[in-house]
Image 1 (cartoon, rainbow, N blue to C red):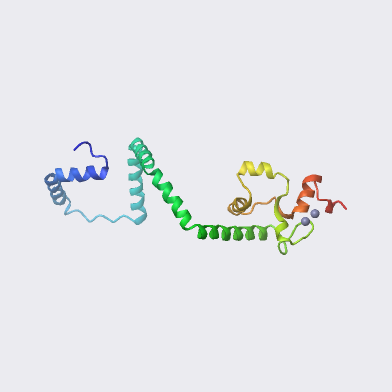
Image 2 (image 1 turned 60 degrees about the horizontal axis):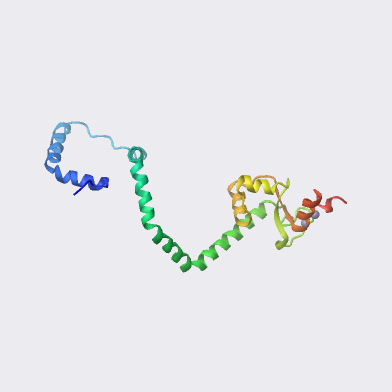
Length: 192
Ligand SMILES: [Zn+2]
Ligand SMILES: [Zn+2]
């Protein structure tokens, strides 16, 4: 039979082997406790807390075993997971892409609305051309910030701004003004 590997399996075998003993124990327990006042049922929160504590203790005790188990499990199923993920991606490709596009548009809209006054336009020259607008790092520290905060570009940058509750230091600029600012330190529009 060998060493049972799972706790549930072990318990099942234990109960089977010791059926009589358990029955006896239960009977004694009942006799001893039948006159005691009924226990106050635990609140839902307390119950969950206790269950969680119990699980935590078990995990701590069996950490190495769990690690091995998940490692083996992953190794064994890795290939099939990959295949399944790929298949499901291709099956739902259109809807996944549509979903990404929608969330991109939504995020972009939110970000541009937040960082512009009176309608979405360039903060310097006021041009409205949507395709020319971008979010500008006011202090020209885009490179550093992208690296430091892992902001990314495009959709991940919008998501970063939203997640960080629209921090200060950004504005909407068109590409002309953006380049002007980058090259001259200030957009030439503002120098006249
Ligand atoms: Zn502009
Ligand atoms: Zn300008």
